[in-house]
Length: 413
Image (cartoon, rainbow, N blue to C red; front, side, top):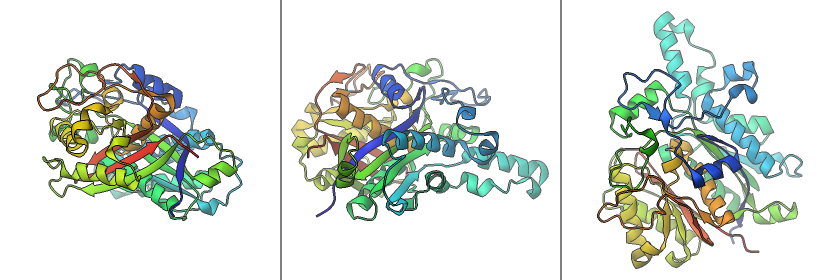
């Protein structure tokens, strides 16, 4: 029999919200964090706004020496991991460090460090390349840095699947604990890709919104006038723990992780399968893995990117799976408030889903004004809804056709 896995803590950095309490208040009450970019000159870019992490002050968390050695995506993850570690009361835990793992990922990694070193190379040749370039920008170092900070010697992975990366990391960590390879795993994702190269890449492929006249209303998942996603940044770290282990130490059990599904569209490098078949199978797999039925799910935290294709396909997949019951399920996208955190999105959104269960309140999809034909689910428009939630699902879909769904629910002994 597979071991049961629960969530006993988490930490988060998201646009305009440092820490769990501020994060919850932001996604429930809004407004959108989208604003004009301050990190660099955007005068030549078609899109001039994003959801920056303006509340984060690096010097409050790291020494000058540490800041020279850690890209922002690693900094974000470490700050979130510290909150999660404290939140789960792991400081004085009696548990072999070989039984505590780290599964933390990113979609893009240290793009700022990489870009800066390319500029230095073209200015002055190879001697200008930092000896710290490689360990600062490769994605797996985020899991390594967290393990080093806390001395965690258990399983350690970084799953890289674009915008599904942190959901896959959490799902694989869930499997690891189920299979008795670890007792506790810090899992999640981080991203710091708001940079000239990151913005330019997404802008030139026409993936992000160009609503420069009204950034606050640019991220509008499922709305007929959506024109692309809004870049965000931050990190989400979740503490997963084997149930009996958590009970023995009287841990605060927030909710239970019940199921994990994954699939691939095998259709296109960026566009989802127009029939929604990959997303449909992914959600179906997660529900079956949880030993539940479609009647047991009350809420879906959607991938809901605010792109024309994703929102239509995700809606189609939900309708295909849930049939007549699809209109009874609450579906919302917190990306409407904090933007798309790319590789960190799944973890941050699973935290939102867990908080929704804990607080019996569903965060809204803000900026929803104009319905589109065929997209007629309950998207929880503009205002949160008080509602008891027994089981919920969080979806993440990434470029390359990578899909991940995680089912969580109230813990019952």
